[in-house]
Image (cartoon, rainbow, N blue to C red):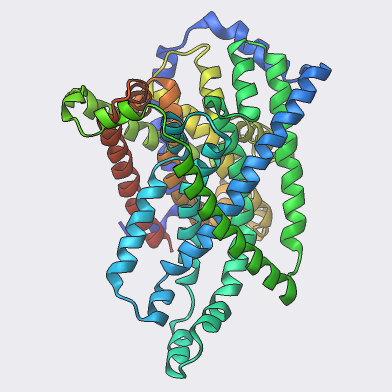
Length: 503
């Protein structure tokens, strides 16, 4: 296995083998009935509705989306920092705490982040109804855990000798923690944390598709009415919001914080942390759960499980296959497309443009568009999730290629090597390992995102989750959640092994 990872370039292209059964299945399920409708959708992108009423609704919904995403992002960052610190090896080393506490905390966070925010939202909506606070809580729960993992991993890279020195001289614990942790935490928040805001915007839009409000709700209603011009007005608005926030946070990222401002950030973060706990507690106690009788009656009754074991195993298998095929697409598709377009400026510009829109269009909308001319299947769900994530991995790959030295490439071209071979050996190979490392991190997200496409695509555990929630079969819901947690946790362990080999 270790020898295999010495050839990251080859590994990056190997998953393309699985494109063959995927394409065959998609062709088999293809039908021409929706082609006209699909072409109408594409043409409407260049002719969106400019009606004043639609634009005003778009602005209002975008403000709702931005506000929800911003609050969720800030709270999840603060909780992520706190949880990342208390689950780091250095924290337990300094305080000399029992290791079983750290193991228990890390296991709990693994379970929390294994469930996608959409699933959290559907659960909370079923219990508390439609509420803007539900969206914030649903995003904060898994995001806090993901942020905690990233921050904890960064803190674990600190030199252990510094910690031992502090312990030996009996330095103040609180000031020592700040001294050791402040710089890596700020660097992580500047790089990873800012990127998470874009993720929060997309998550808020996705939750809106399921009735929680914001631009997602308007997108879904327009799609249901097949009003594609109106739909593209909302999508263009979402795209402009993502671009503008990116530019804003790029400015913030380049800003150097002075000590006084840093102290202000700490104080405000602590206040927001305490307020968030208070607000969450108040929300959970003051908002009476809807359908409480149905929840109580069905919670512990094993007789309400109507899942046939064989069919349930089939749903689990479908979910795993969707995840695997989507991971293969997200790894192999970007380098293949770049090779096809000969790594030219025009080709890269085309890939970047298409990738941008595949990131903007929420996966549920994407699969509904593809369902216009294709029957529901594992392949369709995998394609939807795969191309959405390939749009994200392609962005990283293209950025890395722009920063790689071209000496090897030019040398190969000078001796007459074909352009495609020169690209693969001279440009792609030097950064193939880092590309695979990022893809292995992305694989964790893909496994969790399977819940999105399977809930719409009528395959996998997501479709059964929707059905069980609608019938208030809470025992079935618990079984499905346990299955999701198991698949995600096993996937995270495997990806962790892969990353350790790559490093």
